[in-house]
Image (cartoon, rainbow, N blue to C red; front, side):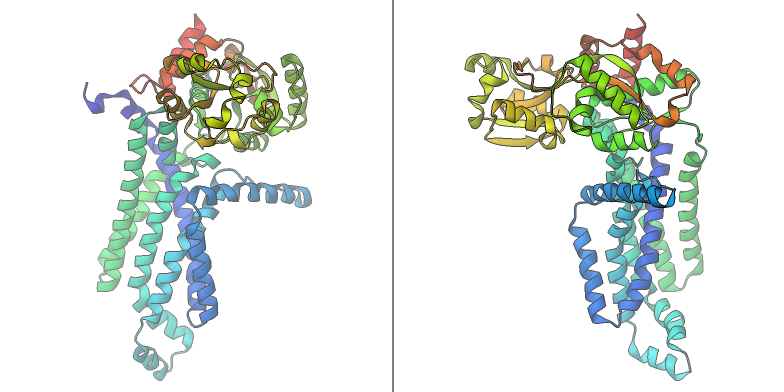
Length: 518
């Protein structure tokens, strides 16, 4: 089978109109906002050394902040502002996806534009500005008729740099809910779908190169005073924007948005729900790669409509309970608490996916470690790895306190990479997931939790407030409730980590549905 006959290529192409359209939309908006802010500031600051130094210094500081961190920081800020706006003015706004991405990317775009605009204006021959004044031009006329036209080629070079930076950094907006070409990369990393990773990287690179070359055509046209080149470059950018935005503008406003977290199982279950909705004639799409707090907040605000979470995550991480109660009591309490936030707990999926400490079976047997209590005595000489969230979650604090765990080192990894790391001896212990098929694949053992420090983690299906009375949605998803046991989910997760053409979340979701129907 040739490389391009792999069905994952066709699946990647199927997502391209949606991902590319959204990527262009957020990039163009952010670049436009950055230009609207940066150009006037640069013109105002060029003859004011203190203001110029301050602006360039601040813009340089922004560049030192990692792109993902800057994008993530805007989300809680806007969420708080939206809550205040709703409280005091009776109108809120969405803090999910598009707005925080645009604001963060606009900040990222400013430094090249500020620097090149100031440099370009400073480079204008003073004799020309004196001549302009000599023929009676006002400072404003001199600026717009002499200085800016002469500085424009240098300014365009800054705009080109800014455009490439924005397009590249926009791939990092996926975790805060903005669909982009980064969806390929994040989904591919989580599910070890390297076709998706390569496709996303190439698509983002080609988009950046295309925009850069079109802007270069405009820059050359301005420098050579060649109006046709300027027109071709401008029309090319306009055509690119219209072509990529058309599919996203035609999306149904009633489309159900299914959320997914940052690990393989969540991708599979989101694909399964989207497929069931589409089979019932309900338009549906997925928003993937969202963190636990981001996805829950998005459900509360109605930015997504449905997703699958875990009872222990909500109990400890979202609602900050520190007590560990029996499963039925926890679910009943959770249902009541969720109702107060206008969220419907539609039902349980039928399996539990709890955090658990996991290590190689052979090593555990050699050291006589069967439980977390046994592990505690040797933890000081060991290294543990966990996912991106674990070590900041209250469940981890509770586990450490219950057993007095103190490891030599803690490492954070992609969830699927943790299993290979512990199997190869790169780390000694991992905080894995009980429904993960990689436990059996790598011959690992789950350590007992005799003090019940880890809460139950039943998979539960949640609906947003605006979908609580949507009977078509409920009817489409009802057959999934209580229908997936732990063995089936482990097999599905193992298939999704297979790395071949049948391991995409969509393909595994179709397999899972066939298993459920039997």
